[in-house]
Image (tube, rainbow, N blue to C red; front, top):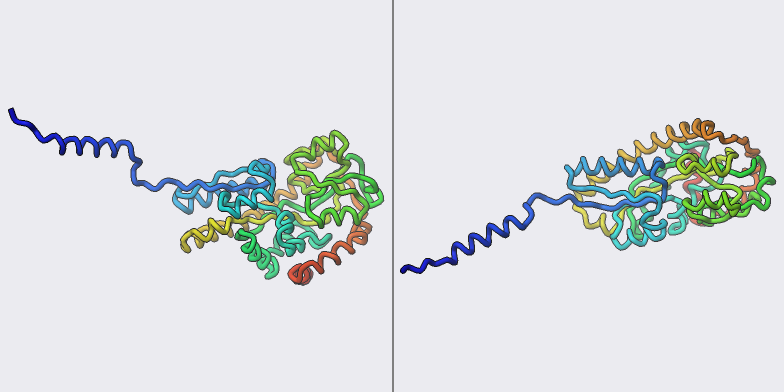
Length: 328
């Protein structure tokens, strides 16, 4: 009886089993993370979705982005820490939050600098605005572009027409020194709260008013708790499209160039969306049955001059930005 050498057949069988178990050599899609603090119905979510869609298309499906709105990955300080470590690749962060890292961004919040959203979007092309983006690299981020959510106004449980109407009133202000200083200068008592806590705080009386953009107001339906909208128009509300420097530096130069082109196109699209959305949201305030209050703007402007002058001295780049905006 002949004994057959079974080794070759065993090897063939094992190889076939491994081919069945192992994935095919087709490249697997890279899933990146993007976080922001705005609600899912906010225009920043639309910008994030377009960014994700356009990057996926440009990469031939190799790059996908999972979006986490409304601070699901943490508030901005926590997301910045994740980004510095490379655990979060992209974000839409408020310029106000980034000002807590680099004071140059306070330039965007000097009271009564911008006429409207369109005026603010034009300022992004200024040399000083672009230099602000470059500064983010020393904080572990790469500034890739700007986004906007309209001008800031004042929402109240009672009408607010003049600074005198704010005396003793608790107003939700973004957790950044320039917002606290502005509201103290015009007579209010600023209270820093996350956006998600504003509605219940209005109901319980912890807040009397809110510093808000129309996009967030409509998205969160805050008019149900505070029906008086005062058009103070006191500041712009920009955000920054950022990438983790750790992630960005690890990309091939061609990939960085391709992503940069996509993001610049999304930035332009976002500017047009911001102007359109701000106008639409003003119309929606009527549907929400909000009472529009015309503010005594001269009084607000005069009382906030000291804030502007103080912050102009914080960083030379703020002064440069202010002069460049005034020259437009």
